[in-house]
Image 1 (tube, rainbow, N blue to C red):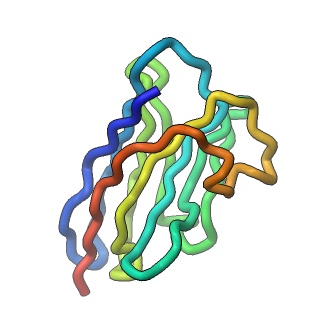
Image 2 (image 1 turned 180 degrees about the horizontal axis):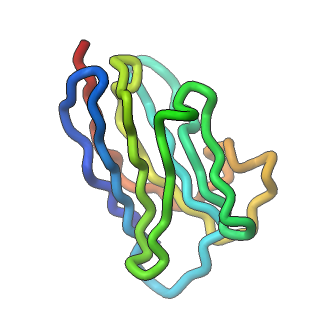
Length: 126
C-alpha cells in the first residue's frame, strides 16, 4: 500500500486547508485511516482517524471542533478539512493506514498503522 498525501501549504491564522490522502497499490481492506503531525522539535502526534468497522471519527482534543476527517469510498481518498487554523497547527502532516481491524483504544497510536505517506507541510502564520 502506498499513500500519497497532498494539500499542505501556507495560510494565515484563522484560515483553512484541506489535506488529501490517496492509498494505492494492491487491493486491500482498510482497518483505519489516520492523520498524524510532527512539529519542529516535537514528537509525532495523533490528529484524527476514521475507523472502518464503525465509520467512526476520532480526534485529538487540540483539533476537535476545528478539523474534520472524511473518506470518499468511490475515490478511495481520505480528507482532513482544517478550519480555524492556529500557528500551533504548523507541522508536517502524515496520513497513515492499517489493513488490520483496529481496536478503538489503539487508534490514537502511531504503532497501529503500518503504512505511511511522505508528509505534507502545513505552515500557519500569526
